[in-house]
Image 1 (cartoon, rainbow, N blue to C red):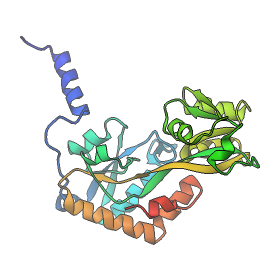
Image 2 (image 1 turned 90 degrees about the horizontal axis):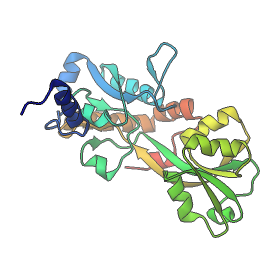
Image 3 (image 1 turned 45 degrees about the vertical axis):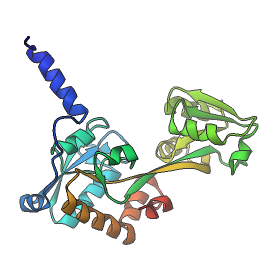
Image 4 (image 1 turned 60 degrees about the horizontal axis):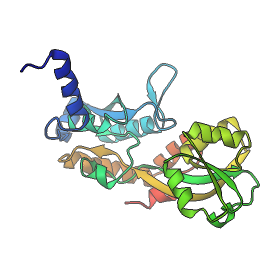
Length: 265
């Protein structure tokens, strides 16, 4: 029985997308240095970590880190736009040498790729109107708080909210934020990345009340890329101690690199 060409193409693409296209392609540091270019996979749809500038070129936190990494290796950065679903397959198939793509370090992902020490992180916290007296979970009693349904912040708020807290669940962050801005709720569970956008449209009206959780992000290489990983780790260590990452974090998120990133290994 013959497969038609369209079905075969779809099946091949599906196989690649789930990372079953064969053994991973380890990056060769010597080849990268010889070529004078390192291919770096990066999201361009996750502000402020990955965006496109006015001319359509990759920009943002990860772009600055990618360029600094390439400079430390003495090569040029060739930034390759990737998506959330295809970033790991791109790395494992050798289409990129390394990922600087807002990739959270998890046990599941660490079974597929090798991570550097953390270079960034995202925190989840409770935010509310400036001046609202909420500093710990117990203070949520009697308050109304918005979260995106089934999100990390939904889980975090649900775990710590005392009896008497009204949790309103919305379909996404945008809807939850709108509820906060319109006064339907007094508090919100949100990532620091999304709150940065809120503060741009309602500067000074809201602030952080307390943290819920955090996740660190690492630069990823394909398994077997030991020489490259050693160089990447050396870069991250230097960038964490000489102020490079603090400067980039301040530029894009308005605050120094968080302590939970600096202390993570």
